[in-house]
Amino acid sequence: MVDVADKLACFQAITGLEDPDLCTEILAAHDWDLELAISSFTSGNANHPESDTSSVGATTSNIHATAVGDPSNVESLHALRRSDPAAPGLAWKLITLPVSVISGSLGLISGAIGLGLWAAGGVLSYSLGLVGLGSASTSSRIGESSAPLVSVSAAASEAMNFVAAFDREYGTSRPNFVSEGFMDALQRSRNAFKLLFVYLHSPEHPDTPLFCERTLCSDTLVAFVNENFVSWGGSIRASEGFKMSNSLKASRFPFCAVVMPATNQRIALLQQVEGPKSPEEMLMILQRVLEESSAVLVSARVDAEERQNNMRLREEQDAAYRAALEADQARERQRREEQERLVREAAEAERKRKEEEEARERAFREAAEKQAMLAKMRQEKAQSLGDEPEKGPNVTQVLVRFPNGERKERRFQNTVTIQSLYDYVDSLGCLETESYSLVSNFPRVVYGQEKLTLSLKEAGLHPQASLFVEINS
Image 1 (cartoon, rainbow, N blue to C red):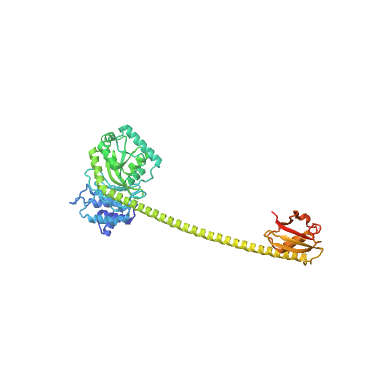
Image 2 (cartoon, rainbow, N blue to C red):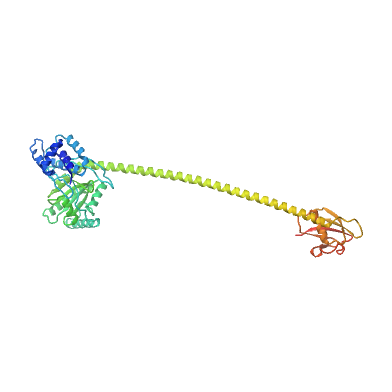
């Protein structure tokens, strides 16, 4: 139910009265019954010389439907009224549905008030006026069922059963009724930017067979409807067809209607045709509705394409931004990895340098220690030899030849052992190796480990001997 402010705004928009106090008095006199107040007001202006009751009802219903559907549009309605000061008097009928649905008597006026969103995922916020169509039964209203339609699967099943039964009875030369529920068909029409042609089938009505055979299945009408509309049909015997007949207030059959989606799960009833009509009459009515609605459809398509282009542009910009961001991140990651690699290589090089330096220092220390040990050993061995004795009968003269040609000579007591000769050679420091043997040539005798304890005399080296150093392999 609309509140007092909405009723007052609606009454002002429909009647054109701008004095709120006067409108309040009229509504209060009729116990705030909007339908009764408007009927009383219009009956008093029925004989106005500029009235044309064949067209004004639809204008009234469309304006009121807009105000009830969206009270914020009242200013737009006043502006529309003021833009047409020669508007005829009013003659209309208010029909209350479970959710306010206003129905006018005659006429169709083109134009959209408060046209808003019509696109996939959106709804159309608008109000269409009506212009006269002669004796055709028309209206402009926003309707909503009192209860939700049956589930999609059940609704689709009913639609398929209707199409199959219609084909069996009248053949397949017919409007392309979609095999889906009404709400899905409405969504299909919205996505296709087309109006929805609705046919409610009453199998028992005596006018139904002739209407279906001669009008609904007329080749000319079928071609026009299939090209310009999305079609949905339902039998009033089925659940959804029955609910739609109640929502659309179908009072005579055959019943056809042209609707389009509006806001909040509502529909705008642009045209309804009740009773039998010839193909020519139906075609004229549908052509008129299509012409009057073409501006809205074109505008909706242009808006949707613009939104789609903007969305695509944003997506392309987002994609380009993401690509640039990913490229920047990849470059930054590559730079960071290169920097980390250089740091690792520098650290590895520093580690190797330190290891090599430590190895050199260690080798130097070891060599120095070894040299010190050798020097100490030579000194100890030289000291162990004692002073060189003077020549005498018990003194042996020993000559030692080294591999490099160097010769060394010294006198020893003939009682010293072969070990003393090795100690003498070691004390000289002429050799880089410690593995060698003292050998005599004629005859060749190797004075090895087994002879170290022999004295020079026992070894046959007294009074003199010539030995050479032989490096052990």
